[in-house]
Image (cartoon, rainbow, N blue to C red):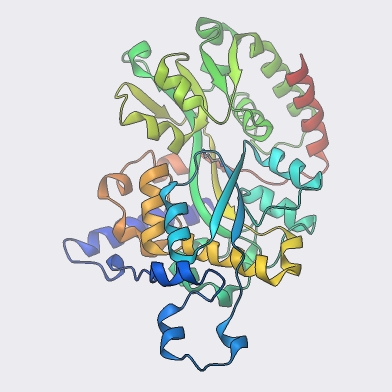
Amino acid sequence: MKKLVVLSLVIVMLVLAACGGQSAKTAEPKPAEPTKAMEQPTKAPEPTKAAAEPTQAPAEAAAEYADTLNFYNWSEYIDPEIYDMFEKEYGIKVVESTFGSNEDLLAKLQGGATGFDVIVPSDYMVATMIELDMLAPIDHSKLENYKNLDPLFTDPPYDPGLKYSIPYMWGTTGIGYDGAEFGDEVPDSWSYLFDPEVAKNYADQYSLLNDSAEVFAAALKYLGYSANSTDPDEINAARDVILAIKPYVHTFDSEQFEDLLASGEIVMAHGWSGDVFTVMEDNEDIGYVIPKEGGVVWADTLAIPKEVASDPVRYNTALLWIDFLNRPDIAAKNVEYVYYASPNAAATDLIPAEILEDPGIYPPQEVMDRMEWLKPLGDAQKLRDRAWTEIKSQ
Ligand code: N2P
């Protein structure tokens, strides 16, 4: 998969170079007719066709959609205008709830939450949820925009053939920092966060993600182990490292670390690339670095909880939403807002060059070579869960 992403980057660059100043084919999205759709919120999203063929059989004409779609997303992970555009176009209101980690998402669903139509699990969590039979198969024939996906993302190890998930965004995990505090120094090692001798200099001035998979991955990398270690000794060593620096951690946070950084409340944040990039525009001192020991690369996906499949109206609505997010103009608009990389090849021509060329958003090969994808941990997950509970409760 590492290679896939690197290859993808190369292709993105090639496509970009090849397009040059020419106008791109994908630069002219075909919006549906908003007012018509607004008047007919439960009709199929093909207003022109329906208008041209008013006598077609009702069964063909009326794929039904719900009035509301419940979207369970990571926080600040979509351009909110996209909700308005979807509602304007189809008359369907998207209601968003947010979660802070894959483990929280899993716990919520396992706890019996049944209202969510579309969820956003990351790669390894998709594999876990497939294993637990928690996801509905995705009917590719109903996704007009499936063809827009970069083929390099359509057969990932976590979900071969994308039977249960459609890639949404991908990015990396590293360290956001306030350059005004660091001067010429760059906190380019996990030791800034996990070596007590170094970390004590930043006591109460840095955050860690509130995400057991990510914090263990970073601590394991600091110790020179794989982010996916299932070795009890290595997991215990990582737990001890985290416990040792915990007194210096200002907060465990996955949802507003970039704002804490921007406001000066902290000077370093263990965090996700795009979230840090969103505050750089107004804070030119803020930087983002992938530590030299390597970090985590991930892809987040759009998936449908299994129970939704038994309700054709909810299921169709979920697919309509997923497909909308894969329309090239929508995918590009979203990238410009969240600063994460898109697996949508057709959106590439619509994404500003400064984003495509930003090595923090589309990292170069030598950086990608240091990254690891997270994987399901099998029985070792219990060890990590226990250790995490211990860490958080002390
Ligand atoms: C959104 C961060 C999502 C990335 N704020 C985590 N996979």
